[in-house]
Length: 423
Ligand code: AMP
Ligand code: GLY
Image (cartoon, rainbow, N blue to C red; front, top):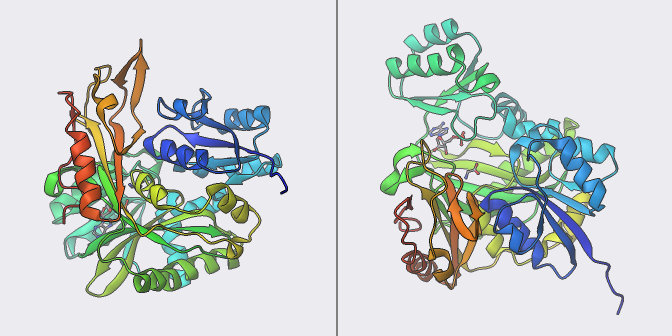
């Protein structure tokens, strides 16, 4: 039999999502050397961490060149929005993700709306403002609730729901006048408030072909029953009960296909992972937003369900031959619960010891995010500390396994939601 040469891979990012991505690569039969930049204590166990700023795309290029990696895979959105893919391609390197222009599907909400309009994809109707006075004038006669969104990247925090004119005026003040989100809020979108069930849908895209899709539910609020402030995501499970082959096909053909075709026709082909945040309303499916990467914590659950080889998928994406690749999602259910530092997403402590808890967590995967090692002790070093994921044919058993494992977390400084996957 012909021996396949090992493939050296560089994963960019340092969260639990990137730990899950690196873990998935590590299971590939063709993996060679695996690097993560900058990585975390979880990736240190399966890869070589390279200390670098995740947004310093020139330093990341230097690392890819130095280690002569065959493939680079980008976890977070900021390096994509900064043009890491364009830069690597200029140097002849294989990198999985959209170019800076295509990443605008996430980094500019007005660009995303423009593409959705061209593609005829359903989304909330909206207005765009860059002048606070004009926005306020318009808001006087609007009907509420409305949703105010910073146009640019705001780490998931740039969305404000305004229940009445007063809240709308506050939102306009925070965004356009005070520029709380910096350049991201030089322009805002104001859109209709949609009511329904939210779902995150993911597919691999090679510019023109789209893989089989999968879905996950993300829990954005900090506390049980969706109370508390919005966070980056406190847990996830895949797939939601209402997900079916028919729904997957409908979303693929009526949302993903027209977007991918339109971007291709506009000469901004999308390559990478396309993530649609959608609302199932009484008036049909509507897109809330697109992201140009895997979600965190959704990646931690969907990658556990990905049966196909990630290296093989990456090559098919790079060669525009995704049509030749099966992307198989397991029938099993995966449940992921994020353990966060008390106080997150606002002020929280770091440097506390997580004690021996982590060693006692069994029968599940632990994907590290905001943890660090200090003299042999695992300590808190961020808001979202780690994600615990269980997988089973039964969603109930997957959930029970995770919560059973979490009983071993005895640290007083942390919290997690108790209602993930508990519908
Ligand atoms: P986004 O960053 O656009 O996904 O928005 C963050 C969250 O705000 C979404 O996950 C929804 O829960 C909520 N949201 C955004 N847009 C709308 C909308 N038009 N109607 C209702 N909720 C929304
Ligand atoms: N979990 C939401 C996101 O990654 O954007």
